Image (tube, rainbow, N blue to C red; front, side, top):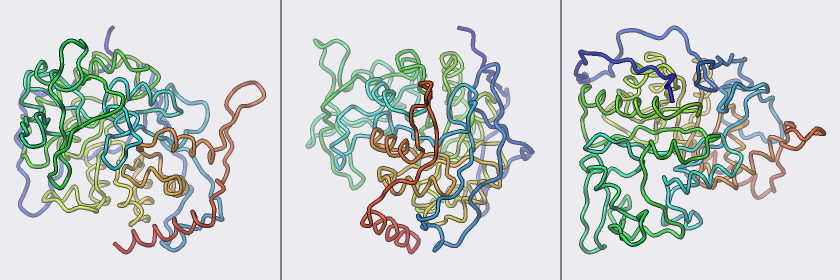
Length: 413
């Protein structure tokens, strides 16, 4: 397959050193933004109509008894749409992340099996995490460290220090006669537990995902880096070139979005290629970092504007606490997606739909995609085609009360 993607290389990368007090800026600003619905030789720029939702007081936002006009923003589908773009549900790590608190997700996260299960539902993308092994192969795995052994004797290794063969030796194996190293996982508070799932699947590479996952499903590739490490520009360029080359060689007609929490990685991956959109991931002010670029939605907008990025992916609480920021993001002609546990609640997803947010990354893929389909009014037309009409969901008084209380509580925090 001939790649249509162009990797833009630089023979003299510079070392990035952040200033002591102010966030860095780039040498120039992007004066325009192209929005992509698909990334082939015939990609189509999507025009951005005026935003339907204007900046409003926090107290006005939860008014669910008034249905605002919904307009299209970025298309997260492929190929170029003939109808307005839909609100997107994106499968988190495939068909949902594995968590001790979410036993309903029984399939190994970030696996071929999980991606293909998610593809059965009405979603345009799955999100997953990519790191590069020590011998230069992009692999799909969320955690920075991979753990094995037992809960009393844990052996951990950085994924980026492993060879590909070492990485693939963990967990379920393709050959049943060759047992893999048992996988463990560490919680945020340091507790280690056995990482067991009902439906297991071997660990995989990025190339394998391109080959074996339903070709209709787009990939939201999170470029994973360790928050506790400082990366030179040369380190980042080397890693990102490997990933971009793999995408260019294997994506074909599949839709791809790059995203990352690492501000300089976002800047560099935009510099390395122009075929696929780059989104900046942010906690939206819910956490504090030494790098000021990660500490607010306003800083995220600034980073995107300075580096020609196409959008922001924010922790949903950051948006709900600061709903007026949505207007600023839209004014900057940026797309806005959200992630976080609250996106597994239909009422919260509906609120974001009304706010003009473009989509959500969720674990409960079937439930949330069904809910979004219901309030977008998806049904079959007379000719068997999909007919879209906007509807307001029928929430109970208890559900509406919960939503109003939730928004108020988040704003207080």
